[in-house]
Structure formats: C-alpha cells, structure tokens
Length: 77
Image (cartoon, rainbow, N blue to C red; front, side):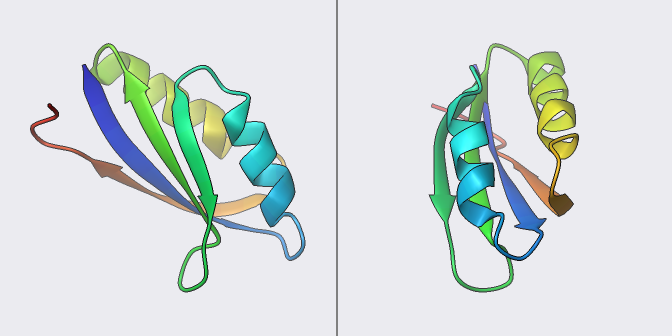
C-alpha cells in the first residue's frame, strides 16, 4: 500500500470544482479545501508507487490546476 498527499493551487474560484473532481477519482481517499499557501489537499492511496505516480499525473492534468506539490509518505501503515 502506498499513501501520500498532493497539494494544489488552482485558478481563483475553482477550488470547489477541484475538490469535487478529486473526490470522484478512485485513488483519492479525501480532498479538502484549505487556507494558506495551497488551495486544496488530496489524500491518495494506491497499491504501489507506480499507481501513485499515475494518480498524481491524472490530477495534474485537471483543468484549472495551476501548480502542485506531492508528498510521499515513507512508511505507510
């Protein structure tokens, strides 16, 4: 099992749209609106690193996503 987070900045006013898009994705377990340096945080869980990378690539291609930062968890439960 592989877990991690993706932090997203998006176009102004697109935050709720991005959260709803993330919640519909199979490997996204949670998505949250945030205040601060990033607009949205997505929690990702996949079977392996390859699946994790594919999920990140899919998220980065969403329209209205401006930039992302990925955080890999080193030792998931």
